[in-house]
Image (tube, rainbow, N blue to C red):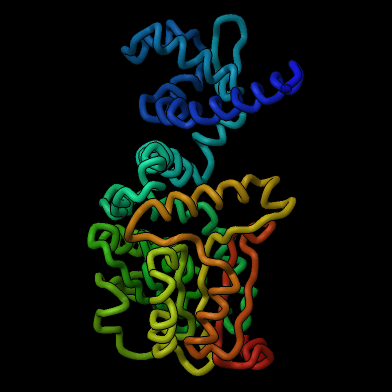
Length: 347
């Protein structure tokens, strides 16, 4: 029989779960309606509602909830932004964080709500609307600055002359590399035309268009760019390819590498440990993996060992990996035809 103390503890865990479920749409509401922007100046809920022309009772309840969960602070009857909310609004990664909230509300909630039927064999929906593609491209920018630095730890990667970015998304990684290496040339391949156009704009903003181009198509079937590359990237998109397709994909990429070239696959992986748990990445990766599997044209997160094996089966003689974030939940898994010693000598 459950004691009153055990029931209280379990009840508290359930309350935390309900709070976590509610906070994402509350935060998104604050961003979308300008509530957080207005609260840069502390004010009461009534004044906030009047200022933005919103329903006073709902604004009051919204503010009360976020105050209870620590996202707003209160002095007297005036609410103001808590430090975490200031970060959400003003961080350099704010567009990616906002895209993550949108993804949680518009995609993840729907998929998880349908999970009972999906578990019983209901047809899984397809991923691929323009809005979803935009959000996923934005979310992957969260680790971009660190990933570009970590990339240089891979033997043979430093100072590439020609870069091929497969599934380049909005072009952020390609633009970042070409800004970093002023004598490099780059080609991005993107299957979604609207996203490809965004990539072209991003390259123009970075002032690297004379050294870059973006092509629209499916890398598996399209006519490939002429010439060979020192570095080929696949950033956060291996889950778009079925496990049975990955060796052929990697082999085709290898056909465009110079003899000492490197392929670098950046991916989120399922991992356990103190650091992934501390940073919330263990639970985040498990949730992302589940949501991926609820969509019929996506696949679960790859196991690191399986990526190494796919690289070996595709003809890469040496493989390795390097963590992008503490604990290794996000990592580069790389392959090269050259021996590691040779690659280091040429780095």
